[in-house]
Image (cartoon, rainbow over all chains, first blue to last red):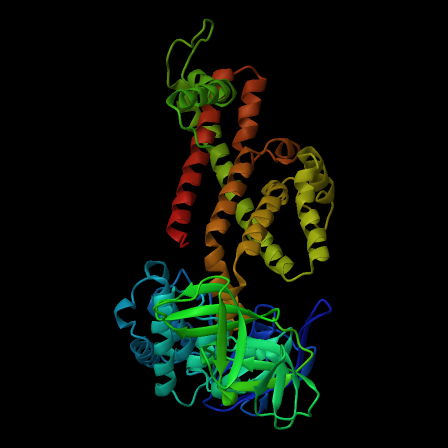
Length: 348
Length: 265
């Protein structure tokens, strides 16, 4: 069952925290809402859950207008960062909570609780209290509790943010598995972590300052971001101002060979190229600059090179003999690895 | 306070004892000593006896103890219900309205309890609400006096309660009544029992408003203690006071047991 936002605006005390959001999540799709804090992504999720009332616009679940329905009539599953497991109830009672609220027959409750705990690998912990479980286990129980009611959609609000890095990648794989096993459940996944979004989502909606900035598949957003914010937030990017010419673009007195389709010569634009696609040494598009910082990251070296007052990052395979601070180096990248974005956006 | 050197630790203990003993421990010890003595002319009481306790646990005194216990239980249950209800309702109000509600509930403890006693007396001496002369006027006055504490303690706990719990419950399909009885109240249970204990203790010791209101057949124990000391029977009064103290502490202890079993976090 899908979710549709129809120009949903939410305001608290006159502050617009979500500005006319239009977005459709297809049935069975995983949509990530990606953005920094304060971007309105959690508010969008809360509007679906029924905890944030739109000042205008409508929210649809599977074609049904649910804008005026109270949360308990929406049939959604929700998992939050703090887990919010009921501390006074055992694990199985937590999972059964939604079923009992629906007056499900006892046998059915028992069967579905077992099923949900098996699905999340928590069968052995049914009689424990939440406080006796680790963070990762509590999160599994929270997911089991949300899935036990067979929700039409599953809302996940930063579900992995409270877990440490190793647990997080494990849970990410678990969530991907759950999605494969429950292909009919749509998921709306709020996160500020681009890795989670890129890994899990069928499509990503990038949000900033209460607005939707871009929406597309992870590959589209990564390979051809629509603007500088999306480029830097999804995957990290080098963004430098250039002037478009007949054959490509000019930057810092150098002519760069680029695909300029759709851009008028003479226009100002922002060049976007991913750090790992920038190499050290000669190549088709050369940039000469001074090394300002060099970080060893095990398998790679990251170079921060100052080119005409702009910092260009390059991730290169670990160097046997890395350049030192202040050294003059030549960077290069392939024409097809660069994208031209509209100018006039901040080059953060 | 973290004190590292041994000397400093001794000094802290010494200061504590100097302040604590004369102010808190000695008066209680004096009452305890007097309750089991026949004379007190020297530095220490003399002529140990249990006669006063015998007197303080039968007849009129036993009747007064029961009266006190019934009054305190009734008043704290009423206060807890009203206070919790008001706190829950207040949580849904805007900040400004909530401040007005809080102020209204604090009013009975802000004014002298003699004034509350007088107000209750005047208010309930006329039909149709003629409570004067019945036990209900005492229970009513105690309820009015202790509801403030129940309200305050429950609303403080409510502001600390993470809204994520009730939202999780609502998203799982629980209607507001179910959320209240299955999630919010169980999570508030520790503060509810704490509030109940506080109300009970306050009601057990209430004298000034009670003095103006109690009918002859509903004499709480503090009134009896006061009457005994007033007519010079200090030792009998002390024994009754010790019984009052013991009964109160016993109930508080029982309530605190409930609290430790009910605290989940």
